[in-house]
Length: 126
Image (tube, rainbow, N blue to C red):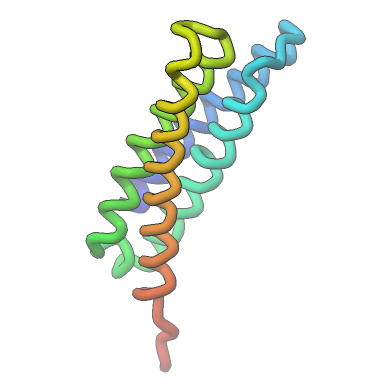
């Protein structure tokens, strides 16, 4: 699971950097919120979680890890797409509440990651 999360993190990194390049080239910064969230919740958070799961494989074997993986990877794209659609006023105000739901799903996933690390990561004595 660790390697899978790191690879997904790299995909978010590429998308986030392309958003940044687009904004820089066009001087259109309306999607800066999407850019920041893609890089922080996508690239940074998923890559760090992947490193945790890779370095401490016992963490990746828990139900909490699986819940984290799915909630984070379902909630984040929903949130990012809906924020972008809301910013560009596609379909009116309907996308802000959906983005919030995606955000809540992501946060719950991150809480499962936090619980997993705090509960299952033990100091090994030698």
